[in-house]
View 1 (tube, rainbow, N blue to C red):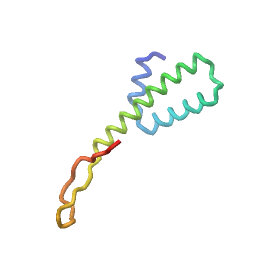
View 2: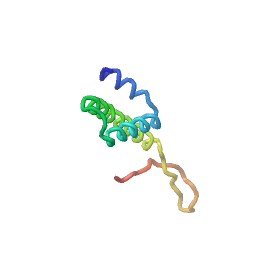
View 3: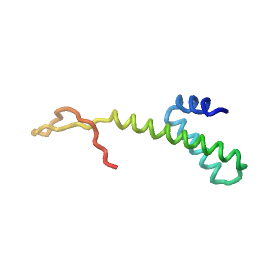
View 4: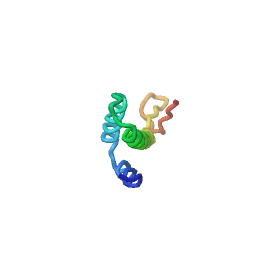
Length: 85
């Protein structure tokens, strides 16, 4: 599998599938029974999957808004969610 094929494949994955594949890779690497060359290949795919998950989470976070309340305590509109990390 070429890097271009891998990146195209990963770029089309929804969050849940990317996370599922990432978790499977982590489990395989943690078992320690994967040959070195294959470990390198799946680790590289894992990095790409992690980047995909991070990007999708940031996109979702950007769409989340918080409801602002007026002086009377009633909803007055929305504002971007301010997430401190």
